[in-house]
Amino acid sequence: MIRALVTGVLVADPQPRTVANGKPFALARVAVPQGDEGRVFCSVICFDDSAVARLLQLRAGAQVSMAGTLKAGVWTDKEGAAHPSLDLLADEVASVTPRPRRSRRDRAGTPDADAGGSHAHE
Image (cartoon, rainbow, N blue to C red; front, side, top):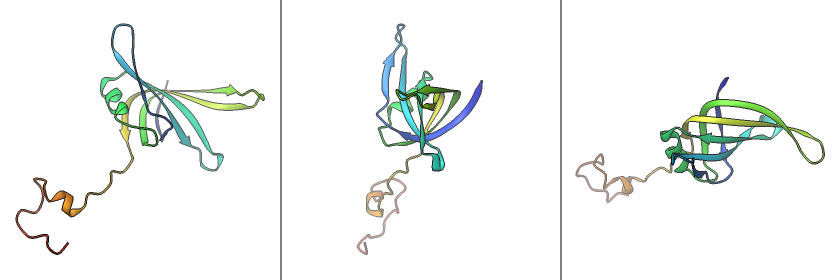
């Protein structure tokens, strides 16, 4: 068993699925950068409830890190060229896409905002 941390970009929206007994799971594909060698695609499946929930909150283009059991393999295209393949059974999912910074004005309505004080200088 290989325990791995895979970081990359979701190439499509994750897909929710359900097994025969009604338990939900999720599928995704992640493009993992390989430096100067381009990228390799990793197929991901999640059964852990919290990992499924986190993954299904994300959309195509999100940067994500996932940990779990990794299976490495090779597939051959129509021209006979070999390509690496990765399959990850993920039990941990975290978005690494930065959230947009909120302006001071946006934070003014939050409980941790500066109590009192004028924002006229903005």
